[in-house]
Length: 386
Image 1: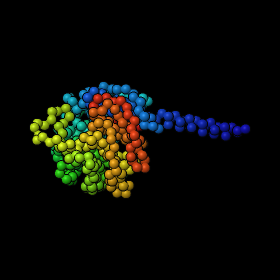
Image 2 (image 1 turned 90 degrees about the vertical axis):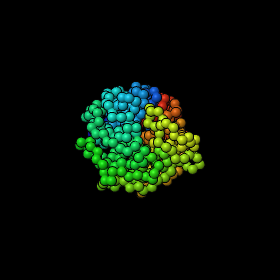
Image 3 (image 1 turned 45 degrees about the horizontal axis):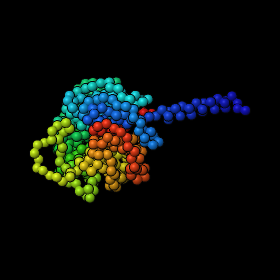
Image 4 (image 1 turned 120 degrees about the vertical axis):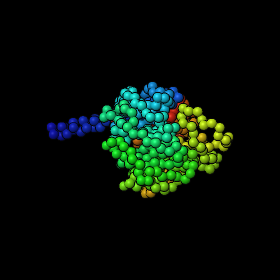
């Protein structure tokens, strides 16, 4: 027979277990995909044990809805509209269902193919490929972007991405046409970006820096070059935030038969007129993502519709190319879930998403499960709600 004290202890333990079970069962992972041609965003719930996606529904945005970012609080999704008038929409994320509700719209100074936030969630960064500029927009205490940009910075040709480092003291931006990675100091109190010294670093001519990924320890910045398909690793000076080129590794095997590419016309515009005809298939790299533990790096190439896998040295950050995997046609966006178990890939010319299970020992991608998605599937965001 239990004493009152032991009975009370048992009840308390039972309550704690119930709370724990409730917390685990209440945890949700949501996947969002922008459909540029349909002008909407697909939402899904991801099953943690299998990676399976269950559609939540679609929310309207506008034609050429493309880059997206989740707020650090995980309460908002920011989606950039690249058709005119260029703007950013703020959606509230329902923590129970993953459904999106538009709460605000704010003007942007140009068509922006990339968006991110600083780590305080007070500032939104965007980059303009066609307009050769970067912008900083304020985010209100309510998580909404409602005002125009407070800083606009002219860049070299084809600014493509902008990303803060993990300390929130430095910001990096790529300019594909100018073949540079710009480096800034960042004041999180005012939102101001100031060119670092030196203000930029460059790979060899013709690479075309596009998207970036930071290592979890903030010691290395990996830049995917659109025109060469190389991933360039830059060592990060922790005190100054400056970059030093460390290595450049191709993601495209020679047997693919591709030659280096040329800069593309901005989305929503007519191609540049009358370049000399060249029928050789060209490298057209797109996105780069790293697993949360920093062990594996993935990049996409749109001409061959492949995802490349690299392993990453835990000691140095050095890359080793492993293999390429077939994926959706013209893969623009990939994303890895916060647990590092699954990779989700979209294809601009596919009506399906692929969800791959990541082998935790080798990084290799398993056979994908595929799910319906809208037209012009573009950007993928994944958020876990505790």
